[in-house]
Image (cartoon, rainbow, N blue to C red):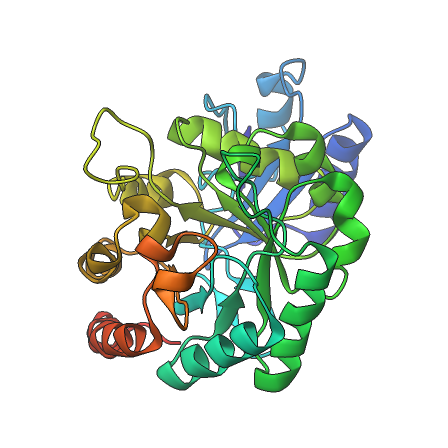
Length: 337
């Protein structure tokens, strides 16, 4: 439910209204515009009489929201959310960032070398997998806690904030010094994990599931936000279709649609979407064109020898070339890094 207040309402009356709503078990999201204040109600509003609320003298209009996602809904939060990762890195409308690094952390030398290379090319966050969900139980599963330590060593060497994936809620304590916690596609509907991440205040990068609708995607974001953590970044990484020429099908139509439906920032991962290194550049350009707030790209210092996803990884030279192209387009779009 959305309440639009009349112009310049008395603060005491607004406070009393919010208290009344809170006493009924409803959370409130307040968005103050130039002429009106909007209060979004989150929770079970089915028993809240519209006539009763409309009769309050400072309320101009009351609208029920039909979509099941509330906290993530742009109707409740008209202004686009900017997620602050560090003092110097904010992700959202007007702030374009590139997250880059290896699919998996393999050694200290590897991850620090890649981190220095991607930073030199303009990346502002470092990605790297310490815990790796793999289709085959015999494939490389990552270095786990040791991998996290190596990522933090790379952070010390370069200053780049770290983005890495969590797979198990029991590992949350290990991620204390991680800047952005990633929820992978396979865990998009791991609701117990999402609830726990809602209790922390770290930025969460939530990837869309392989076969999930946009509404299901936003409902997963809702789980995190319902717990009190509004620092959610959406990531479109391709969905599974009948096409076999690419690893997945990159749904670029999701970018403008999700921006219409939600105030949350959204980035694109062309590496996982295509699974083919030479397709990363054109799909990155396309992502910029449709309004993505950033990119997540896999970079390895020696892709043919990578222990994970070498076929979709760029080498540092290819990444540098791509970044030069992206910078020209981002500047044209008027976005800031």
